[in-house]
Length: 181
Image 1 (tube, rainbow, N blue to C red):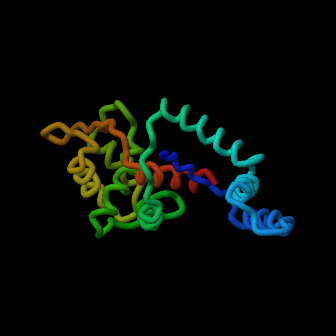
Image 2: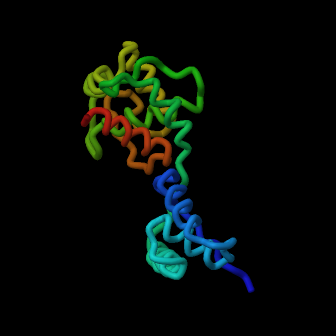
């Protein structure tokens, strides 16, 4: 018989450890398999293991209707966020290729959607979003990465509506929270 794995999320591992310890001290002898399952479930906020399993099964049934989000590499987000100051402006151009794209997504998110922009308008938006004084580099990079389109004479720019990577979304959210605080 195959069993469906039941992932256990613990918001506070210290509270879980205290709860498990308190439950184990009430046992006279070594608890059995089902008793340990119930203890683990209770220490994470469920009534018992059956309650935990039924909640998981119900959640899986509901989640099937929604797409599963891709996992986020938060280590990468933490590395890339260092390129921005407290005001959310890009301090310097990343030397690492893998750090450039998330930074460009942040700049992309600041461009207005579905609007034509002239080169001076794009320069003004980019100038207010970085500190190293090279909007031309950023404009070219946004175009090279396919995040903006431009006319052959480079007079008009338009943001390309695409879905950012999970890391870029996390970076944009983090910078937004930093600005809101």
